[in-house]
Length: 463
Image (cartoon, rainbow, N blue to C red; front, side, top):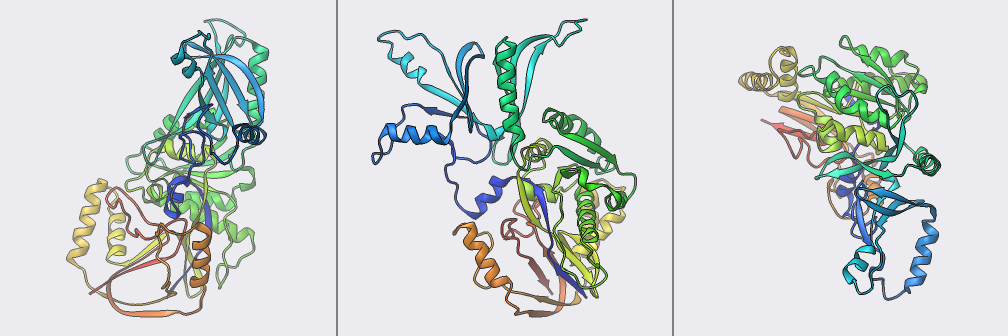
């Protein structure tokens, strides 16, 4: 008999994607901005105001909520701009000479571009050094690195160059913005990186060094990298590692590597908390968040968290501190812990996965097809008994209602001690705590599961 209990681990992932499952988007920005994740915006200084309040009153409230910290002149592109740093955003507008009667230029002067400070992940002093020059080089200005949304699920990094050759001027802006960035919560300063160099096409090391590591260096994140050498290496490492030295773990590999890291992290949490995993116990949450850089064949965990397997997107979520609690299953037999994981399949699914694992020498697509066809050829039902707590009045994935209301509904119905029993001969049983999205199943193997409403989803296939 196997039992399932849900501990929890924090993961860096796409919060906007998850929040869209809970409720409709609401405007959080200025002007036309409608998203809560990085996006450059434009606004009009003299835009229309609500008729119920005076323009001066609203401007006064806005100024008090977002006080100006610095103001100066920088060249952006080929134009001199009036740049304003406030507590929430960095805004700039071109400086244009006023010509009487030039209505178009007057309107253009009132346009302002901005980027919210929470979308900035790094700042550097920009210098030019000649060949053989010993000092730091000639100051050109400041380069600001920002996180932008690209399409539905992807993120990309971009830059804004504020050009000014004054050392004093640039240093004051650099220090002020740097202090603000250091004050953002959940942004890691030190990470433990675990790379599986043998994952899928053996590209994990290259993906990290070319696409992820440069971004971590820009964000001044200290990294400690370990290349796994054998199956179970990550588990052994996490049992002995001094985890208090890090702000999080990052796994670069496939679903198997990530599952091993999560299992090791949660197992370490139980050991540190004094839990006896050889008897019935209530698992505790892992202390460190986990980041997933996909380098596998199916990348189900990365797709479920980010909506994409794009490594840069995952790296930027880690840098920006986009945290989301994710439920994990506890698999036990006769009250003894077997493993922590995100899903389990019995019958057809379990046999196909086990067969594919034995033929890892084959290309991934051929391995999947071979395992499925051979398992189907020998498919037969098996006798199962499944005990579960049903939820009758809540449909996971519904777009209506607030997140708080849905959480209350989950608590109200999940924790009623009314177990139901289903037994019989089944071809397949799947137990999943995440939607299990991938390229071959865009809606997921369990499309009604959401990371925001993490209810277990048993999927039964009866003869």
